[in-house]
Image (cartoon, rainbow, N blue to C red):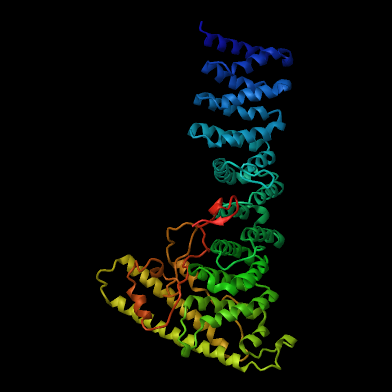
Length: 548
């Protein structure tokens, strides 16, 4: 009989004696021999040891250290079969000794970097087994490999594998694993919040999507719970940081976070911190922002404006009016006009002015009476009113001319055979023109009430912003992060601008021929969804920064 056969035979004997013994502590030498067998040269003997070590582990607490060490050696063996057998046995160390769960989960998490599918599958199953045994301790141990303030992560590969496991294996089983529900949902929320010190944009979105799915943040959640989600987003947006007009990464992150917070504003959470930051830091340096981000910012501001509090509306209105005047040209100056900018800012203006109407007296020369000292009715703002309404008239003239050309262009396209133009290009041209008409119709609907000396501002949902309508009718483009399609109006982020005239959009060209237009918006919505802020970017260590 070979030495390997003797080793295996001896292990069976040790195992049988331990199984039959009523007081297993009397067979300590048998268990020691099993531990020693983990270091033999026989593959089958080591596989058998990988089964026996965890099976009798609980009976020999004095040997726990050497038993675990020997088993870990088996987990790192060169032979795949031994490693897989040892990994499968790891949860057994905790079956009757739950105090070891954190340590074993920590070990299993480190094994997530395994390259062999069968080995990684064994790790996944072992981790899920421990999660079902003690979800709180297991989650706590797992999240230490993502990142926490107390224990910074040094292995990015391990961190990534842990994130993938949590995303693909843990999150889908939340209803099964997170029990008792409210207690465990709160626990995993706290773990996630501690892990957000340094995440990419995609990782943050993944975590936020998961948090939104929890019952504690569901549709019936109180406002303070919804506000908690907004505060998490505010933390990612760095709203306590100073801003320089050249910091494009910060702008991207801010726009993405504002877009992410919009659904929570609708549910009653406060937009105050975002709006005040925009007012104080961003709008004053709007011209310094990267051109492609300006339209994203204005769209997000427009969609946030219906949920602004009256005090915030009053504070931000001066900046909005100043910007609106800048982009509403006076005919005699030959200033350029960006239709999407104007649509965004008129929408924002109406919703903010609806909350603080008499603030427009000193900004636009209106005479709105509320009975408050802030009415300032004793002051003469005639020149402001004249200037503002002159700009409104100029916008209306340009908009009507644009609508005429768009309509004519669409008619010509319908009559022409369109030689050399593909069906897909025709479809894009038609969609662009249709969106352009929606933009123009919205502008006229919002300018017309503003000619009155005491106008009624639009504060309801009667205006449907042009890009929101476009989302319903245009198939989404295959870009990361669910970006919305570009706007149609040339000079305000139409697709041809973005592609360097890659599409021969003759329809839009004809519609705007001879008109003054300018600028080019960003085109994408979601403020860089899919561009994500990256870890370790541009020599910043583990600080957040956008990668492009």
